[in-house]
View 1 (cartoon, one colour):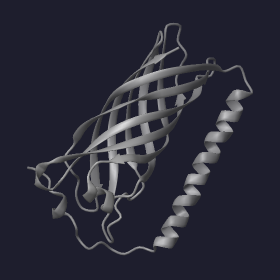
View 2 (cartoon, one colour; view 1 turned 180 degrees about the vertical axis):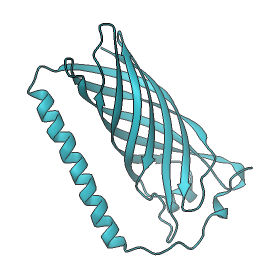
View 3 (cartoon, one colour; view 1 turned 90 degrees about the vertical axis):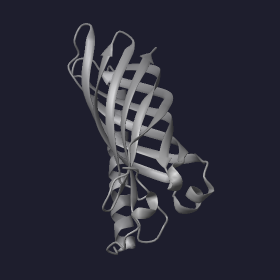
View 4 (tube, one colour; view 1 turned 90 degrees about the horizontal axis):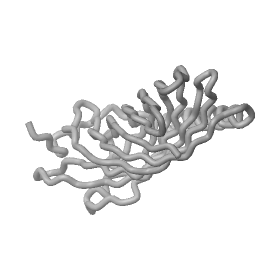
Length: 208
């Protein structure tokens, strides 16, 4: 069944926008502060620092109030900085990723939205002799740098943020990772309409 964007514009329950915005801002400040504290902690101990590049595919969908869009395939590419403590297996990995997301539009024509995405993931896993499996979790912040459709420019917000969970494996200089992200920002600028980004990402990185 082909999903049509215009089919899901129901009248939603109105919220206190000011209160919701204050809660979101407080949560974002707490997340950013936690990341800064962790980075400062790791910088004071014997941590390993590696720079890398990565690329992969993402399977994107949009969650609406009472429905979900079809999953579309996009791509991602960018750079990363990994800081970890070998003995206790804790690390942090901020990234700068250029992500191409695809959105299905009216008439079946797909539209591309390009984002600059900044995920900051805390990692934990045992440090084995030849490999390092790990779990990861953390926030992401994204900004739409290129919205090709004029219709989307008038109905979508540029800023997006959310949280992600995933797992990965460092072996030699390679990093395999899979992560699912949930958007917490309503990216629709249409009144009484909610649209959030969800994405499953698979990537391969090379650490220098």
